[in-house]
Amino acid sequence: MNREKPKAEIDKELDEALNETFPGSDPIAVDRKDDNKPVRPVDRKPAEIDKDLVDRLAEKAKSQKS
Image 1 (cartoon, helix red, strand yellow):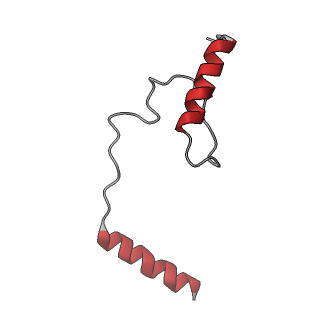
Image 2 (tube, rainbow, N blue to C red; image 1 turned 90 degrees about the vertical axis):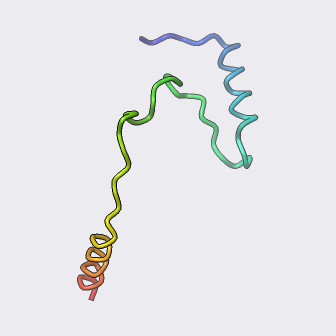
C-alpha cells in the first residue's frame, strides 16, 4: 500500500531522526517502511562459531596466499 505521509508527519520524523543522530556526520534514517517489522526473522539464531573450523579455514587461506 503506497500511502503518502502528510508533511507534518514527515517533518516530525525528520526532527526525531536529527535529534537521535550522533555524531552529526552520521546519515539519518527516516525512510523505513514499517517500524514494527523486524529486519530479520525473530526466530533466526546467530551462527555458532566453531573455533576448529575457523582455525582450519585460516590455515587454508594462508596456504592459498603463498
